[in-house]
Image (cartoon, rainbow, N blue to C red):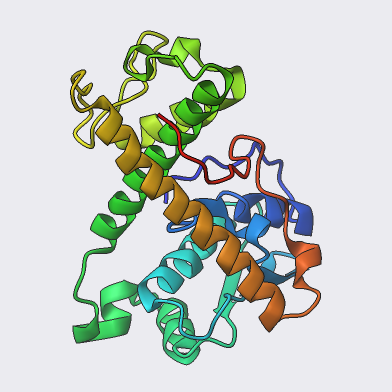
Length: 251
């Protein structure tokens, strides 16, 4: 997780703890766990903080669950004045394993042993790239809806509306791409600008990534509210930089 914590004064409050948890992002859905309603409870007793997290299903991938739980522990630990943090994952098939491993400081591999085959760094990098690709497509699709004749290959960051540009810059910075106004918006996975012949194909592939990310986000939000009636009150509407885009054929 690359978290930018708010400027917090000394002293622990639930509000400050929740602000820190807001920097923790579901890697697949590219949304803060606080917005998704994954934070079940926060209890503050002097310098001790206890957080309970919940997920849409009991069989959410253990590596994803571990990322969010361990990131939440790191984020809360960074809050000024926090002396002890207990983060627990509720109602998951691996809750006991995850909670014991986190409490003992065993790390992902120490907790899951031989089942921890893949690198979490690689997993996180994969979804960081997908988050950028989805944001890139949203920005360009927004322009195409306003001007269907727009040459997407020529669009630069400086051409985007401020909100779309800011959302894309954050994700470009995370994957190491230029963020200056003159940087082209449409890029391949390796960061290069596509040629005239393959620009449309690059955008279509980006659209499939965006639809997958958005679809999973809506699906998981619905699953959570089905599993935990009333949890919709803890969810925050999707941010303005990712409006729901109807499926329609675009150039």
